[in-house]
Image 1: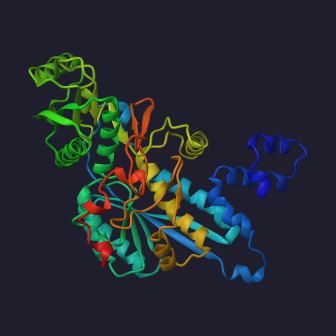
Image 2 (image 1 turned 120 degrees about the vertical axis):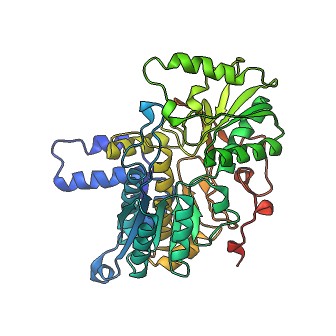
Image 3 (image 1 turned 180 degrees about the vertical axis):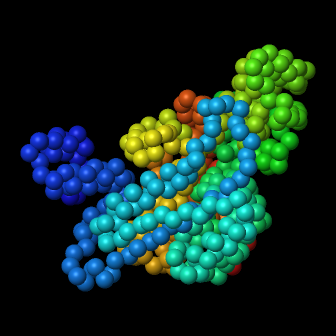
Length: 436
């Protein structure tokens, strides 16, 4: 099997394509393709041990349930019909990761299952998740919830053998002043996204920024991260402007004429700048800005050129087969939330494979060690920061169609890991939970 894992999939596809192949051969073929679809570093430990056999191992079977908690929130629809989030946003990423975990887990007599909790009432959602932990149904929670709900959930299960993976909230306070030792973050923070973008703009020498900020709380948080990134990487914000908008004034038929006049007028008379940075994480207005600026300037931040954890056009580092597997499962492209959830669920699977264990306490402890690594189709092994639980990861700088570059940029070095040039570094952290 080790030899098979190193061969091109096409050879083995031809080998099993014969019409005379038996049902057993077909099962083996599917297993081989599943193994080939995973990073070899993930599969190797299981292959080295070999499959579990015999009655003795049957009694030692390890079943691990991962609970995904989703807070159903009223969100304003995006400007473009192309950006409507699918109903299974995040859930599909979890399902793919469960399949990947089971591909390796079957060699170690491990099985992984996914359970979901959804509720629009944060208190009810927290109570239900707490109940699952207390009765021993799960010790691993992947959360797609609001920041305050995440903190409530963390405090509700404090002291239990359980860990929460924050897959959606980029708020810096969750990693800093309000950090919790039982929370890990696979979603990149505002600071990581801003730093990834700012590094590339520094390489391009687009150093004079005109900053446009919306009126939502998240707009202010991302703007804070952009200000910090500007100072950190030698940029200058020459002017800031607040873009006030009313949701009810969104234009439909013929409305583009009004927008075509409004945006240039809003930007007219600004200080001399190289680029317009727009802070609008909710994508409520930022898409109005590209190609409508008063001066002929590029737009970045929340539209135009933006930073993200994942992009459906990534083909590098095995990304093509990863994207294709997701499309076969979900019937759509992978979105950043899907990817963040996938990394969370795969973290559990990777720990279980490396430790050859299903014990929750042991796996949580292992994920805190420096030797824990996650292969995630980004060209580097990812690890969790031991000062705030944030997953180190490269940040993609992209347009809607293609990724443009990947940060950290080669020009920015670090004494320990270049990935720590993205986001809050250890000497800067205000998180005290991990030092206790």
